[in-house]
Length: 266
Image 1 (cartoon, helix red, strand yellow):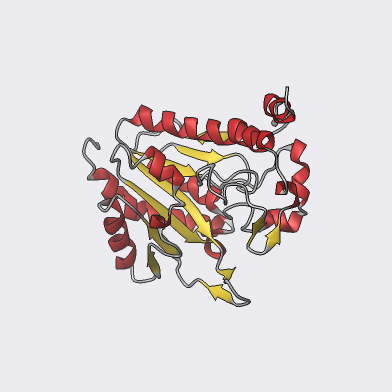
Image 2 (cartoon, rainbow, N blue to C red):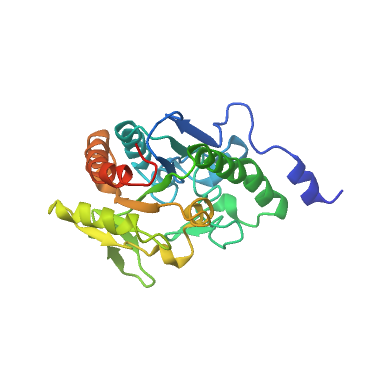
């Protein structure tokens, strides 16, 4: 048996490792499913922290800071099911096609990830089989159980990121509304957030959902023409519980009328 076959047959996740997916409020009654693809910075024990220290694993390169806090608070306010990723995006990015070069990054925002260097096919296959596939199966089942729900993907972004040269790029938006093929839910959410008057709201910012990186919505919402939107929140605004609760309140107030107007809601 070739070495890759031996590796792919072994188990990446061991007793004591967290599950690939955590489901919160599974019986929530709202016509929506919330997903957090980058909710965790955990790494399977076998991967030895990917060779990174606490500082690196605490940065935005490893997870979407604050998004799990917002997700839990928003799920409670909307009474919606929430699916949280169990592992760091550096292990495998759940919002990228596994064939995408950024699915398992060797360099992220100028930081090298030693544990992602020179991976064999078997190494990659184990991450896809034990982390990526179970997460997306759980999302698929949650969406199926709802019938025709809105799928709301929650993310957060760093206020400053490296540019292509030596400059650092400031990101002024408080929240961004990202969309690709669904043009009904996003404009309504944009209008509701902008109507507050106290937020800088990005329209397909800090990056566009049309750039091919929105795997979760492309797979679980767009083929069935389900209402969908990706919400990006600036990390410094939601890094603690108070900020996360405030953002959840803002989003819940904007989303409730939109969800109530969906066909079959009520």
